[in-house]
Amino acid sequence: MSGTSVDPVLANFRASIDNIDAALIHMLAERFRITKAVGAYKAEKTLPPSDPGREERQIERLRRLAADAQLDPDFGEKFIRFIIDEVIRHHEQAQGGK
Image (cartoon, rainbow, N blue to C red; front, side):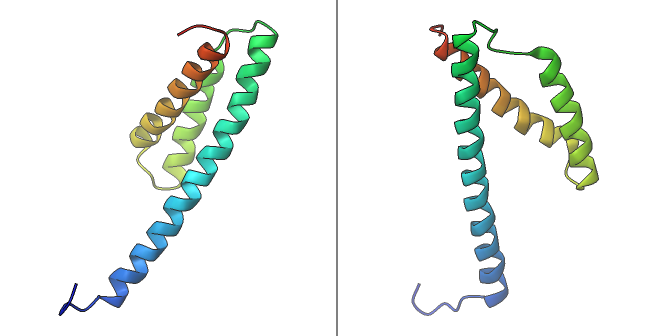
């Protein structure tokens, strides 16, 4: 970008966003390492891949946390449902289903 100067305030904001994004990826990776172990355990014990009651309690809990953190609870719910759906898919695969 020759001839253009970098806005230092914007650059600082972007550096913080980049750090947060990196932390989110690492936290998701850790979460999925744990849920992979849960899926293997459920498969070993022939437990169902999903627990709808727990999922709904988690969603309600996370909606409250989102609201307390001034994050749109609907967005928080969409985000956690996406993760839960992916975890269930992994658990089904661990049990030999598709």
